[in-house]
Length: 212
Image (cartoon, rainbow, N blue to C red; front, side, top):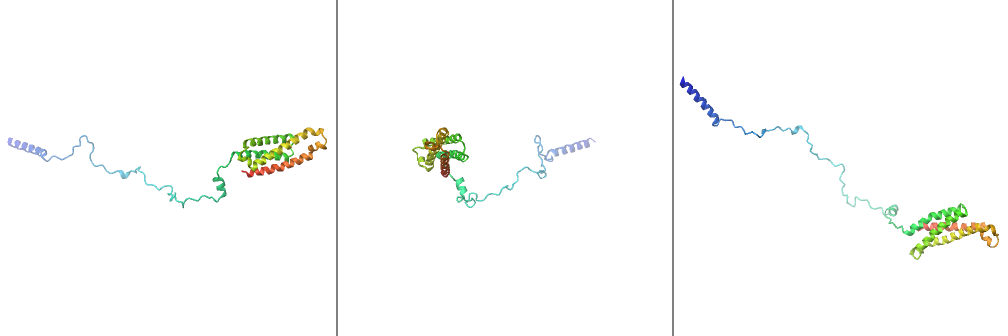
């Protein structure tokens, strides 16, 4: 009985030794490294946010710098030449005479409307003073030889003469007879002078407009 117990103990010891000498299961050391197994591929179950190639909203312009793609400048079009390409040729002289046009038109309307002496002489005075300014400004300059400048000088002298005539007639007519010196203050004479002045103003307006 004692021998049987020793035999059993020997078998137990030999079995435990077998696990320690080559029969121990080979397992990786996973302590402190987390899960090291193979994960399943789950990327197919989700949509990615990676940008996809898209077609441009606008088609590419071909040969943008090509002369065949650029329309020629319409230089034969007067509107383009006169408005788009026209250089700024406005000179101080043209600006000055341009400001005179409204004065001449007002003076002309005053004659046609047969306005009274006071209103006519006020407009005449304003015009002649403006022309006097031009005379002093452009005297001995190339502009003084322009037809428009000469016409303005002549018209200013004539306007001043008629304004003086009307003012004197208003003042002296009650005391003078129509004969002799009083004839100059006759209404017919004054009306005739106003008609001459009207024609001269119209001619000057045309010259000034053509100078632009």
